[in-house]
Length: 199
Image (cartoon, rainbow, N blue to C red; front, side):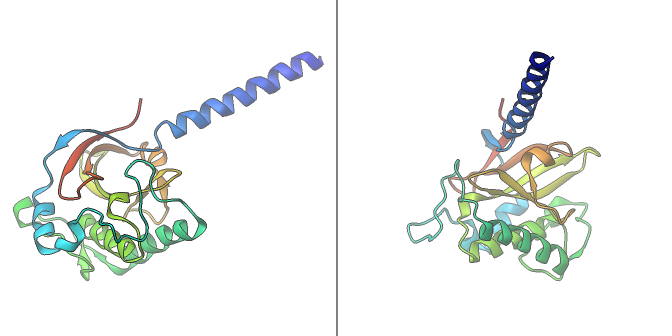
């Protein structure tokens, strides 16, 4: 009887370990080759050049594009705070039908998902987060509609800051809802890359 309990116990531990591996396997997005940046992003960089510069030597919160920012309680609180504050400060406005007329703005009174993302990225950079750890990322929803979110790359996970939810989610959690399309390059924010989940 005791032997059977040990076997069941070990099986349960192995099951939990496999679930943990399944989650961590999709916790970080992987570049999958060059992609054209959105036209509006190119215009955004022309209007806000300081927000499109690669990280320089004077950055106080260096982050490797792969390892990400060390996730302390303070850093996690910053992500949650910025996500909630920006979501509350911008009144939702539909995207224009013609992408040529689309304009991404920092802290507009009203805007769409793109405006939320560039505002959150700007706010976190002002708090010392490096550009290569804050990646604008395009996703496709189940409806087929495309949507922009901000990926914050940390030592633990890639976290998703999204105007559609107050919750700070890992890439693993958001993958049930989104298909990952393309993101800014960690090496240079002016360039974009196709993206995939690992494995």
